[in-house]
Image (cartoon, rainbow, N blue to C red; front, side, top):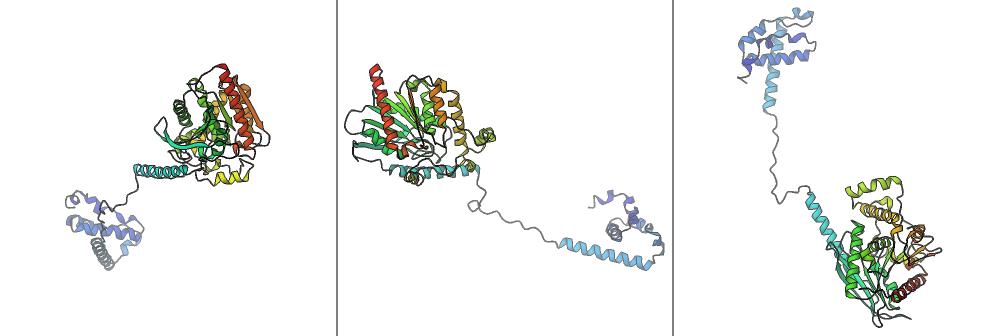
Length: 437
């Protein structure tokens, strides 16, 4: 303060501050002038000689009032100084120990917790998958007892994928059907169909997708359907290596049908197959609104796991059998939540690819669809049949049937149609002398 005050120009103390009409402003500047007078006596005396300029009545102010004003200014300055010294200081709270601190969770911590919860959910689902009744050794009228088992299969990226098998105990194995289930379900739902195939000496294998059934991944989340395609190819290679010389078929339902068709479009995979069977395949899926299709790729990158409730079409029946509906939606291994953004975008992407490439499908196929299906488009199946150049192809449209053909009241009829087509295809393969290694 002593270094700064001498630099103040004397004009500061003699500046006509009383030109302001407000009395409070005059008092404020007088208080400043009074305090500085203790440090600059000469300037104060100069200030005292100056006649403050106010209104025209200033010349009539008696000396007593001037003295009273100076006393008031002194008292006010003194009070302000005391209050300034007695002002409460801000308390500085000590930092808590590091182990007691509760900072906001970091992104890495949240990611670690998400992985932990995902692993716990996978372990729970895997335990449920192992407890699914697969019909061990059960034989009804016209059925052959089967040898059933479940195991883990590791896909292309090292994910543990839950798999099942139903093999006839007696008789020569004529062929193998590999089941790729639909979106949100699991392989354990196809036990009855598998036993029907076993009665015709056909072996059955099935695999749960990533994020489905007893397989690794967040329940109901598919980071890429191309992953499912590559896992299907690896599963096919594994089964063929375990059953050399046995013709293999791929079966896909709904979105699983899209996966099977894309996998079979690869020449290396087509060479390993005797044919494919598609029930209610998802071949042409359009978003509810064009803007959804436009923003889907963006949201798929920004928030891939977000559950898009607007796309959760509740109330759409998939079977005319009430018992089948109750069994499906009460199954804890069936994902019934809203579709996740990335999963929905992957369905749009793979169906758009397949629609553009109907004319390049050369693998033998049999497509089955219900005419009243409100989930996937039966006309797309008809377009596939019409456009595909495959030499060995068949289609059957079931009048009045809904989406889940193998869970309709006429499921036995649908299963028999599939078996008949496979037998016809096997006779054609054996007659042509084609071999499978």
